[in-house]
Image (cartoon, rainbow, N blue to C red; front, side, top):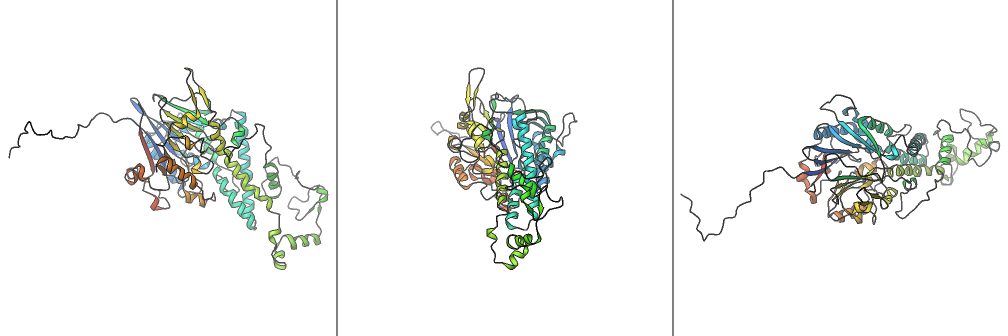
Length: 520
């Protein structure tokens, strides 16, 4: 039957507007690989008439992660597929294993300068480090050597304590072992993180070291984008600030609180390094007034004398040895011979925090005066506090301050897996706008199993982030949040081959991703 013609008095028929078929609006995307406890982010910025600008920020997972090598290789193959084997920048934020392990486990997937192109391997145009890793900077060299020496000492001490039968000593060994794992070290082994950094230096066709105050970096072919270096601070005193946002330190160098401790460990617990003195200058008495309970394989120190059999039997009966518990009521709580070891965990934590504060922190500005993407690595209080004083004066008279960038931050890579001292309040999160999106690269169960505590992430911080972002908080050990698309969005991402421990928390995605239109 022929269709009735519309009369002039009929209302106009509603039709859908014609859909434009032109090119899609360019997008920025940030991909967080679901490594578990670790950091690995791929950033893509659109170029004009060319392949996107690609930046890989860290590439690692915590030591003793299940399928660690296979997982990092799978991730690198995905990076190669996404970038067609061309990475503009590899950013190595700091020397912690959970940020750099992939540079060891998947080293064969990287091309080195001068090698022929290979579609299955990744070419790195530039590698960026913080100034604290610059081998030509005397302060950086000193910081690095001190860090490696302390890792070696703590590793040897933990190995020795692990062989002791005392519960207190073994508890300390567990704590120290968990912390030195951040440096790729197990008790009795040297750390591997510096080897990963050496690999990264060898991957890049160009290698550069960055410090706050330098002119903003402008990626080639990405108009309007400026990358501002916020940290680590130049003032070494700031590297020591880890607890209270209002705490300040003198600029003068402080005495190393671990010196006496490590010397005691070297003499008594197998943590000796080449060049250590044979005698303990911190001993309360001269060797001439000391008696050795056990002279050891090297014999007595000069001036010392052997303990008499009766004195040795008395000390073992009342203060040590199996005979004590067999013949006397349990008064082991009175013993003080292992109390000095309590400093070991604190020294390991201090080393960990100082290394976190050397993190290279980048604020990526999308257009002059536009939104900012903040990658804070593991920066802690001292690093954060230095940003409020950051000031740039450009050639055209424009000025930029650190707080200006925070006020325009729309994406925040949450510092140090959401720990208590890696996100400031009034000088940090509270300054950021309410349309914020936050990504936390964390695995709570892994943190607990590694003896790092149960506050990764800190519940109070996670609650504050949830309120600030209206639920737009992404954790890689949880399903993709409904506020950003939920399972429908996560299901579109590439499926992983290496399963997570908790299948309920795994939507099957190798990565989580957030996209936003590139400001015009």
